[in-house]
Length: 107
Image (cartoon, rainbow, N blue to C red):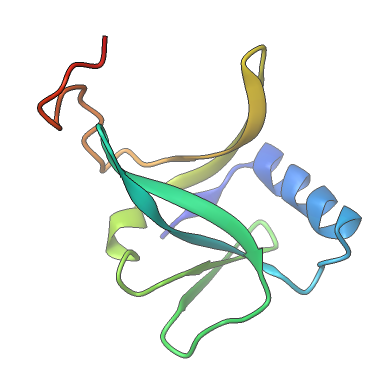
């Protein structure tokens, strides 16, 4: 099931403390479709639904709806800090990230 990297866990724990939301989980959801497939979103959430899948990785509670749990079997939540920006990302090797899957051009 989905994992979280050490750096992402550290950043999330700091965020939860700063936002005074230590009792919240990281919810992952489908935010839409893009040229490379499903686009996922993330939010801090303190409401867990009866059919949600809950996973704990590096002391971070992750909540996923049952409709996307299989899609995220091999996914990893990571944190990047580059010249282009910083933030949390989902690396999902089971998703086809080939450019042009929507029939358009990515150039």
